[in-house]
Structures are given as structure tokens and as C-alpha cells.
Length: 278
Image (cartoon, rainbow, N blue to C red; front, side, top):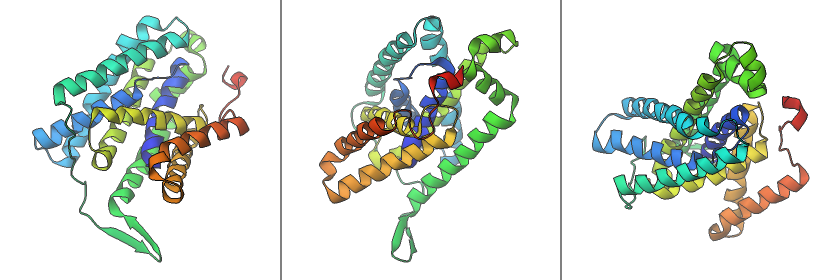
């Protein structure tokens, strides 16, 4: 679960760095990505790998369009305008998903055969190991993209200062659209990975709050690994709360931990002070 939370939080962090606002619709994009995966695998009967590639590519295009339609009109306004616009868009996407695919949950088959790996007294579900492996691959790709490619370096520059980036000749609006595409691709990976665990329903949108918790614990900023660590911490807290207290109050204890953590470390584990980004 921590891996899924981390992927969602990573996408939110990318948008926050580029726009200064939170994409409240990230959970809705997770849901839409999960439904897109269901469409390619369940309805169109495509093999898993081609379906995953098509799903991520299609949703990246959706993310770019989302940035153009939702962020572009309010890009010169205060960040809260974008957050409100994203909130409305998220509600619209979630409701449309329920109209198109219906309210009945889709049962997504496991990606690999049911089995487990035993290391001493520890037993690991192979599907959970697969999700962890996907996370590690995605983190490596994002790190290489942001640090070793021209587009990634321009994304980082825009995250530092849109005004200075524009003076340097960087196409800021285009780069922000690419960032929305990348963020939505991450949301899609999270949605596809979450499908076999939660079922695919419009309620998957609530995972946005878990991704937000991961980003807050890790700290909003340029550190990709911070959000991933935050996701694992949020997941571990939920597991311990469910095991030692009650699974009914797992979410409540998770957010109680988040509040306590913010009181102790308001900027998160790897967050930046306000002046560091200027």
C-alpha cells in the first residue's frame, strides 16, 4: 500500500513544484486510470503488458489536456484558484466514471498467480513484491528523467522559477503540460496497481488523501525519494493500526499520525523552507 500511496504523492509533488498548487483531482485521475486499465484488459481482452502501455499513454494525453483545460485558465491567479478548479474537475471525472462504467465494482484479476515467498518467519505475497518492483522501476525512471534529460531539467527549472525559466527561453506552458502528463501517468500506474487490491470503483478517488499524506510526510519539494518514504511510513502506520487496534479505525489512526507528525516536523522529512525554492 505504501508504494501506491507514494506513486500518488509523487504525482502531486510534481504538480505542486510546477504550479504552486495542489491537484485535488489526482484521486479522480487514479480512478480514471484504473477504469482505463479495466477497459483494455477486461473489455478489449488485451494482454497485460500492451494494455498497461496503452493505458499509461492514453492517460498521459488526458493529463496534458487536463492541465490545458484546468490549470491554463487560472495560471496567473492565486494557487487556490487552481485547487478549486481541480476539485470541481475531480468531482466531474468521478461522476462521469460512474455514469460510463456504472456503480458496480470491477474485480480485477491478479497480475501474477497466487503464491508467496518465505524468508525465515516472513511471508511475502508475490503480487505485493511485484508492486514494489514496479515502484522501484518507476522511481528510477523519474530520477533519470528529471536529472539526465533536457525535458527533466527544464521541469526542474520551471519548478524553481517560472519567470526566470521564461527569460531563459524555456517554453513554460508546454513544460507544465508535460508535467501534468507525467503526473497523470503516475496516477494511472497507482490506479492499475490498486485495482486487484481494492476493486475498481469511483471510490478509488479517496486514495488522493493517502497520496497527500505521503507527500506531506516526505515533504513537498524536489526530493522524489522523500515522498516514497512518506508513502511507506503512511502504509506501515495503517497496517500497525489495523493489526494492533482495529481495521475499522485504520484510516483515522493514519491521519492522527499525520497531524502529530506535522506538529513535530511541519515541513516533512525532506521538505524545503519557503525561501529555498526562490
